[in-house]
Image 1 (tube, rainbow, N blue to C red):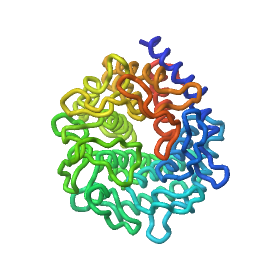
Image 2: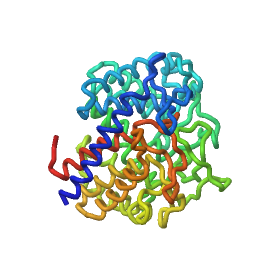
Image 3: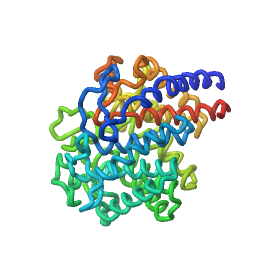
Length: 422
């Protein structure tokens, strides 16, 4: 077992240190205006697109900060993170109404001034990480400002959770595709992630309390009561709804043929396993007893193991029913990234080799099919036969957050399993 994991570890180390981090050491920074440019073609060359999204600015601040905290970059990654903070504070923050604009032009002029809770979650996550990495007081100061405006303007004090799509003045957007009448697993999972990091950075009791509340809400309202897999979208009172695409997006989403949206009996393998490992991290930060959650976590991991893994060609499918084989059988880069970390955590938690088998399946698929080794980053989407569908290296919504985090976290877990600490 140790030799098996050491071989996997060496491949992760090579990719992380010889390909992935070198790519992001030289790509992304906007030397003219500050912040980050995120559009790269299949060869890693800038496409000329210059729109800056709050999500990618935040995620890149997080990634560079986390790489520094992991001991990489000899200070250079922290400086790149600092320059990202230098850009977003004066350009993305709304001094009149509070909160962060959703998109901006290259020079920081606001384009879409909407307030999306998803973006605010990642600013809390990123600024907390930056504060932990740097000691720069701006990190925790602005993480707390973001946390406070979210609690004040977006919290739903009737049904719990948070409104997700709001106008610049924090009024709710229109219903339907504008999202003003919906809540989601995705956003609330990432709020848990953000609040966990905010608590780790500040030690504030109220942050711990809010994180626990988010955990309880996800387990009691968002995960399917029988299968414990995630339901994607809800009405404000947590009635499950068909998953639809929104006017304001944060991914290269593909529409579905059904006019009313995706089927109600549908779940994301990647989100489920991502939630599981983020929750396990939260239990450590908050000091929770993980045993009481183990049966539910096993259901999440087993669902993906049984239905989400392509055991013939490798990799993780996108979506499928709560109780059956995958229906959307394309393979997205971020789902692979999150399942790598998740299945290592499943193996560490339960000691069952089937989870290590699942990890190795996805690992082999990523190393052989998803990574564009000549360039250093990952292809975003492959079909069920492992043909590349989209081939860009960077996009308005795809940068280094999933890929670098996956490799840093997988490296740490494989080292622990191997007893091969740095």
